[in-house]
Image 1 (cartoon, rainbow, N blue to C red):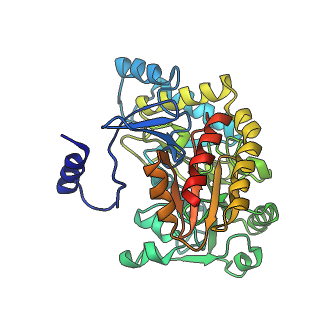
Image 2 (image 1 turned 90 degrees about the horizontal axis):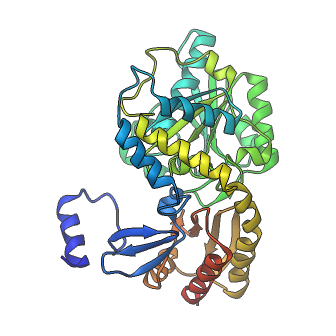
Image 3 (image 1 turned 180 degrees about the vertical axis):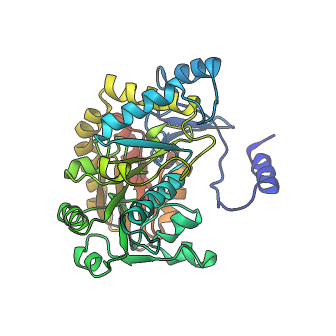
Length: 396
């Protein structure tokens, strides 16, 4: 069956909720993907910032195969060895207190919201609390996650959503303060807005949110689902700012390909929120996914992945800045570490994405006009050069 027939079969059987690109991928190696007809692609999308180690990184596959031979699933009614180790690793990396493993980033958001609401319930004895979220944010597609996603396009078809949500402007502390009431239980923000267009938080904004939350006994939730796990050169982007949240969500590169997420709580949030019976999951934190989490942390530590991202970021930014200088259709570059965006003007960003695909480069969009660059964290200068050369052709 050729690639066209494969895509036709997919459209005949799979619910059409994605406008997929016209390619069927068969395998990956390093930072390259290969379609079913053998064409090679440089991957600077990484499964939307998931495949931080690329494909078949030494030791990763073997760790998963070893765990399959031992134990795949056991449920959270019992302890298992991988979740014990993974919990300890995530607590150590975040310097926070307690972890709850989920199957996805969206579920991590749901758990974080529940934890914040339960904290406020325990504090106040009533349940009509409010959450402040940011305009242009994206937190997921379940009803709760949609409720705090600051884009009406995503929300409107599914309303009414969860009540008690107000929206403020990202990087505008006064707009947040204007939404605070005595019912506010949480403020939620991405440390670096992803889907909204690659906007890093201002340091003063995050520091102001932290002070505000401390003054009002409000929980600060930072969404690190896309920007976390090394993408900015730190395990979590908030560590670059020195502003720790009360609850953090993570997923994507946490397992580098297996479906695993988590929400992590500091001592204050953990000790006074969710108790036995308040939250649960059948698959979350099972031995298989936690074996992946453990191996990812081991590789990050042994091969100094964070240091590599910090070292290579200036070169990546230099190349992207060069493209912005050379091409009138690139209005600006913004981002942190290996989470970068080029603002495209005067032509649809999708046109650039499609041209890049034709030339063997995977990049994706963010918002309405941003070319999103989120490669595996193991790329080299040579891969950056290859990416820049292809994009140079696409932007002409």
